[in-house]
Amino acid sequence: MAYILPGSSLDADLYAITDDALSFNRSVIEVVKQLLDAGIRIIQYREKNKSSNSMLKDCITIKKLTEEANACFIVNDHVDIAVLCNADGVHLGQDDLPVDKVRELIGKEKIIGLSTHSPQQAQKAIEMGADYIGVGPLYPTKTKKDVCEPVTISYLDWVVSHIAIPFVAIGGIKQHNIQEVIQHGAKCCALVSEILSAPNIPLRIQELRQAILLAHT
Image (spheres, helix red, strand yellow):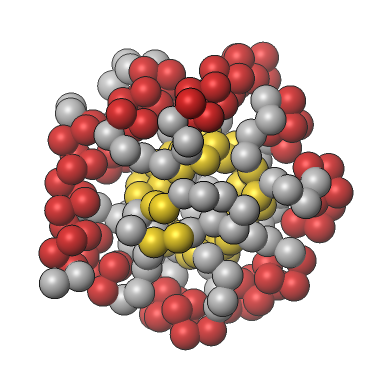
């Protein structure tokens, strides 16, 4: 288990991201409860097809659940909702508000993550004050329609060698390839469909953690 995010007391190996469209009619709240019960300690709320009111309602509930579980709660993109629900932080894409501007809005105590797809973007993220970066997509993925081409394991190798701040590997990571990601130096992996689309979420998380353990042997 690896220390991931500054300013938090948690250890993490898996970073879960919500998506109602992939959850087999399970509500986002039900999914979050299962994630927390299975020991997930970083959850990002990423819902693209809900109203602002629905997202805020979800996030207020999730913040309470994650706080009770001593877990970290990150909101994707929506800085206003992150502030209103007192989330632990926000995750940004390359086309979202700049990190330094978001810092002015949410304060120094909150976590800011930024998706990166190249060494240049990673270096700029550090310069602008990101607390952690997303590294990917490592493999082909259908989870995000507007995602760039896979950056491959070579970008992960570069990050491991050159970047000092925490990072989260993401994009097309599955049970069959997570060992490769870990063996190349990732300490935390973000997964969406591999977890959410599983008939049994706790069992899938257990299987993923077993694969991670094998990668370390």
